[in-house]
Image 1: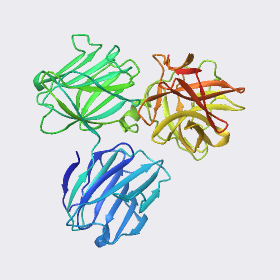
Image 2 (image 1 turned 180 degrees about the vertical axis):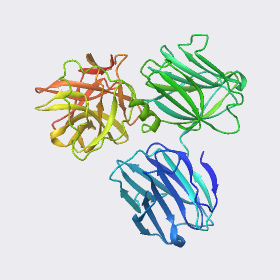
Image 3 (image 1 turned 180 degrees about the horizontal axis):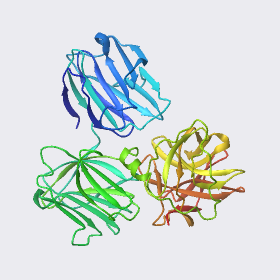
Image 4 (image 1 turned 60 degrees about the vertical axis):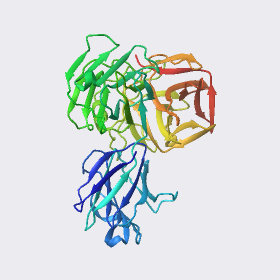
Length: 460
């Protein structure tokens, strides 16, 4: 269901959370439809703005940090219309921003941001004599019946934005497996006929935390909850990562969370939209404080590395022990976790490819990280490196995933992927473990190679 809204002639942005690297919308306005791409729900640097139909509906531009000259300018006469909706899309990946028309694959504007930043929100507004009607494509929506049966979704990043519409009993479960077995941490928001909320651990009563929350949810509109779990601490906020705290509890999630599940019951049904966004700012900040693991067993200790000249480390992303630090061009961030050896130290890295987030190997002398996908080895100049962590390497085989294995990515189908490594041709090469396939895949010699016996990285 799209979000419908009106924007007056006042150039004040209304912000909406986004994920997946795409924002689809329709706009009906005579001129000057403006969008802001930001990390948080407000105007702040860094920020990219897209202006459609500016200068009397004659041209469109991309502007960086509200500073002229514009970084992109394109003649687009009559691109907007006051009498009909026109559809557009904005996409971003690895710092490349593209803008196109609905139904057209080719972009009419594109820009490469040299200092890429996480885009978590898009703001919309109109101005310069124009008001507008918008239809914004929301996240995938689904329903839950009155049956207390969980619907599962894989997660690996320590936070989620959840939109719920129902009269009561918004149930959210955090689990290490796709089942209702312990360990499990459950949230009941708007329970007891929409009067109270609780945090329940392993279904043990009394509940770990209970708060009165009268009229928290509604059957008439979506209520937005921001749920985060870092270092065992569970927090639920209203509206977004900077919203007021509804309920929180310490030492509630002391296990690796691989699945988020939702359900309704006790006379209630629900409609849901869930956003899993890896680049959430609050999660990043908290995880910078996460203590690291012991160095990986049987791997050389990570050397003390100087910060590469001219490089300032971006904020880490991800969750769990250690953190994932963005890097590029062969850069090895301080405290990078070693993962193998092939004539030089290899490090544990991951990169995005074909809608998947894939663990692989960083080869510093090559200036790239390599991941395996579709039978081939793919070099990636932009990647993330596991830092300030490590754990232990545990021998295993097939799809046997130890309970403490650390999720490090996900397939294009949403299945969690883990870090594995293989002793092959005189090398120790890290790669990805794909549980449903029963193999560890490594990038080697231009190929994707599969091994049924391997070592997997687990937390201590």
